[in-house]
Length: 534
View (tube, rainbow, N blue to C red):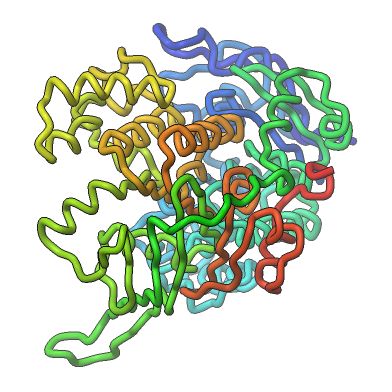
């Protein structure tokens, strides 16, 4: 196969004082014409740096220290800025991981697409907007979405806009940098199918960056595995997945959670938490003096559940299913419209003031994004001890116990004087867990705690949560959109859709023989099942 891209011996140096001399070192990789190549590895492995070098977008402070990047036979590494500008979008385009951060929040998405088209072609605004509308329809969106701002679109819709923008100039190479990491399983399947379809129709080459071997299995022709800036294994996808030769590759594949092997349900006991008929409606609009259209969204519709000590109940479903709203209502970060939340016999839904404050101490939450949920201006010591000090515990006693909790979650006491930005994503999630455990809760709510983590770090955090649950005899409500993650840690699973409970039962039974068509659709959308579950 003719190579459209040939990377040979690429090395990119890190600034002095880094944890290693090179971000990528001696990387060689080819992408054939009309071929899909996946680069897989953990955070810090050099995947994105390789892609950014290929786009001429290396961050300030990172410089190519050697090697070659040839595109269609010509050397592009080190070419002048004006040549890079002509290439980007027209010959090489990129889909970024976070479309909300990549799109301009104050400009309609249609205008953002036409801006790129008009920067490279002599074309009027009306004609460019017509092209943008045609692209949106091809991506499965309505032309009316051209006038929407990024915040008015869902995550999947924003990613489709990014793909439309990347394809607007018909590039020969499409680089996709973790484009499905934060999406739920059905939206991820739709985006992957869209990329496959567009690649075949346009005969494009694709460089797809991911840490999910399920995605690799379903999408790639060839795969390169990176670790600490180096390619440790590469080859046809079947060869690498079916007969991995490097221990690191085998470890990554082994870390992918499987649907089989769910924990057995616990013997029935009196529930520590019982939710009955919980309903929540969000009301928006009305305009000045109540004029204008008023919209209502029923986020929760008569949801009921029970949770006993030592048990993990998984809440699964797509974005917008009501999972996080349910968690926020249980911990009373949001008021409820109807229903009961019985915690040790007391109804949290009707509580306020001191009574609610005392009960909330016993129900703690670990949030999805550990970075935004930790105050960047506070040290770990201040973050972890804030709860006990707010409830009257002395600073010295709280600090002593903070060291114990850090040890429980696998961190050294030396972390106490440091700040959140000094830690990796997995370490920050451990800090968030230690903060929640400082108040010795009876119920722990984990809201998508591993969705943004690499597969190996994800496995470590899941093992940690399970060990802490058993050690402290916690009742855990685990919210996720990943059915494989739910199978790894949950005794029971409750499937939600549009604010309602679709199905509930023991994890092993539900995954082996789902009763609902919707649950079957979620299971069918999991990437890489045929190869990774074998």
